[in-house]
Length: 76
Image (cartoon, rainbow, N blue to C red; front, top):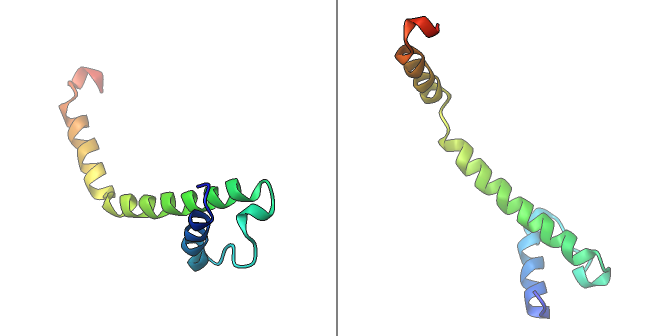
């Protein structure tokens, strides 16, 4: 993002996280990459929580046990 509009949109996205309320990313050379990293990290965390909600330990255990039962007895 090279525009002030893009910076403002990013700050608006981070505001609900309690970040960047008083600091503009252009105020420090390392500010912009840090703000982008936080924004990207939160996005990844949200995606991770959605993916984790789809995971089932019961289904995983069932698949594992099914595979064990398929092994020839000589391999056990």
